[in-house]
Amino acid sequence: MNVLKGIDLTIEKGEVVSIVGPSGAGKTTLLQILGTLDKPDTGIVHYGDINVNQLKEKDLAAFRNKNIGFVFQFHQLLPEFTALENVMIPALIGRVRSSEAEKKAKEILDFLGLSDRITHKPAELSGGEKQRVAVARALVNQPEVIFADEPSGSLDTQNKAELHQLFFDLRDQFNQTFVIVTHDEALAKLTDRTISMKDGQLAI
Amino acid sequence: MQFGRYVLLMQRVFAVPQRWSMFFKQVVQEIYKLGVDSVGIVIFISVFIGAVITMQVSLNINSPLIPSFTVGFITREVILLEFSSSIMCLILAGKVGSNIASELGTMRVTEQIDALEIMGVNSANYLILPKIVAFVLFVPVLVFFSMFFGILGGYFIGWFTSIISAETYEYGLQYWFSAKYIGYSILKSMVFAYIITSIASFFGYNVRGGALQVGKASTKSVVNSSVLILAADVLITLLLV
Image (cartoon, rainbow over all chains, first blue to last red; front, side, top):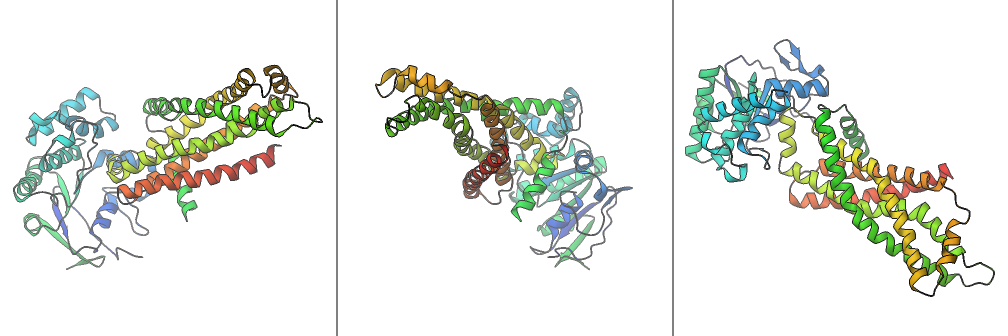
């Protein structure tokens, strides 16, 4: 079965792009292919000059670690580790020294207003806090782009607005690129560009 | 289709670990969790089965034509050739297999595997390879324990009952002994250990859904690895004997 039917898409650095559309339109599939978690049967994904479809498993994992950050609807933090450790892990996997990773992680958590929660485990954090820790984890390796799949889907209005504001703050301060799959009309309106999908195609 | 997916998973599992230091650490942990923690049950079962085999054989062979030391001989052959490798591994398929399948399955449904994946870790290699390596390396130790304590179980019958004397049993144990059988048994058990760990990992790693599916995956892994162990047992016996 073809989920996506001929998608042609370019995303610029520093852009906040939202992908909207009804359930089953292929938004998540598109995001997973862009994020190299899934391979397309046909077609190519380029990051700058790199064709990621040609990378081997190991190189791809390293590429993903360095260049791509993810934030999902459910936080996907590791329950046995504290907020600080969860944020540090991608840096440690990328062979950053542990003292440096810790400094970096603390900086980011500080920026996200979580400095008094760093020793707490995910179970002891609220939904909004967990989601912000997930954003911090996505940021720690200074990725080229952050992919978010329904990042605010499980949050209340207040937390949702804060999280959305955070995306734009990060864009303004660090020129961070975001690609966000969302059902949230308000968020889609705020973004620089909205891509609507329907039945595996880009709707105009 | 399942087989194809199994092969694809194994392809990802058997890659060079991203970090050797982590790999060795994991292997040691898994040896503890899967191997050392099984020593107790292996000893317990082996002593009892060894005792029961000795009793059953001596109670069933009461012909004047068969010398009574045959009991020791048969007990030894059964324990060395089949019990301490095949039957032991069937039991371990239940213990170790369900442990692995439920651990990986829980990590899957709580999205921890996805978390590893998005952080740039080859999760199949990182999670599964240490389990396979650890158990394949450690299973010979379990087999040794099983052999020793199985035979000891037979001695208990000799020492504490009047069914057979310990001396006769011991004579039978040493009669026509071939050390080759021990190597053969260990080789078999290593194949079985691979079957148990890889099949359980396959079912656990590929869980879709929730807690119920984790339970199902661990049942499936036990059933499938048991069947495969028996099939492999026939095959290896045909090839090596």
